[in-house]
Length: 354
Ligand code: P6P
Picture 1 (spheres, helix red, strand yellow):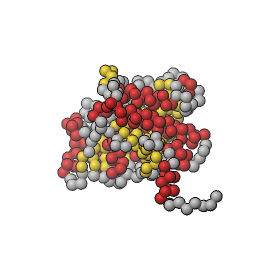
Picture 2 (picture 1 turned 30 degrees about the horizontal axis):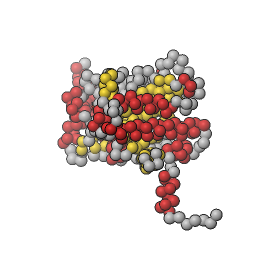
Picture 3 (picture 1 turned 180 degrees about the vertical axis):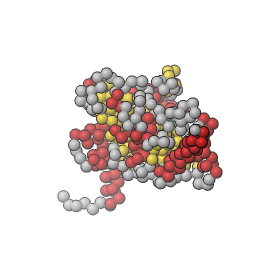
Picture 4 (picture 1 turned 60 degrees about the vertical axis):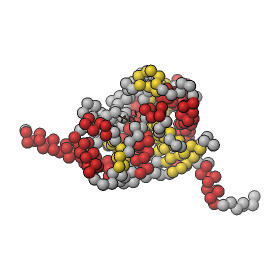
């Protein structure tokens, strides 16, 4: 066939519009192995879940019974929104008959949910926060979903999924969906961080940004300063520092995914420290902090508890919480320096007294 002359731009945009999530995974892995195909199929299912949740959110304000509280309290002790349950069930439904995922562990479920028809063969576990930032749902502000994929180790006969109680380096893939002015899916399978934007006219997530790298430093610090008097003195020292120095600006949306996405895009640091009453903090390790730490490491940033690399933390339970300091290397290190300084001072006092 004659080589038809096409404008380069048109050819590029057509090729980009064909770069769907499942194709991108195979491109990233440069492989069509069984595991590559599994990961591609897993990401495709997550994309379907994201589309279903995005569709519901875009019409929830017009749908009877879509918004508001269920009247129940979840395992976290938090009031459950109707969207929390809907989103949780969406993830379960899209993995049925997939042959991929035997177990789903969710913020909304005390124990993992097993999909029996998948369990003999499905060797992956989805760990997820179906709706992160629920307080934003009824006021139409940004919210997200966070996901992490791990390989199932052993047969989990007792149904306690103890093999999930391992550090964040065990993650095969991680990412989040941001339900904002557009719906974006950001993911990594260990070959960089890549973002996709949902094209509603196609019903496909299309590649929008590849190999995202966080700036070494950024102006944004994102923390709920309403907790100031609950924090350790070292965190207050950091806050006093950014208050007194030029070049810092506070941004906090109340939804981790949105705040994280801003930091990833513009640089800076997000903090959810422990408090004097709750030293372990609020955010959950397996389905909030660890997936984001996986992404941040891939994007050239840093994530810690303040004293330990977040990806090294081993949970003692499915819903273990951990303090989180995550973002640009320089900014996370600055926060850590205040923690180290206070620890040194405390040690000196102990030494003097002894
Ligand atoms: P606070 C939402 O409930 C969430 O888990 C995160 O999305 C968010 O960063 C944090 O809690 C907000 O908590 O105590 O500042 O309202």
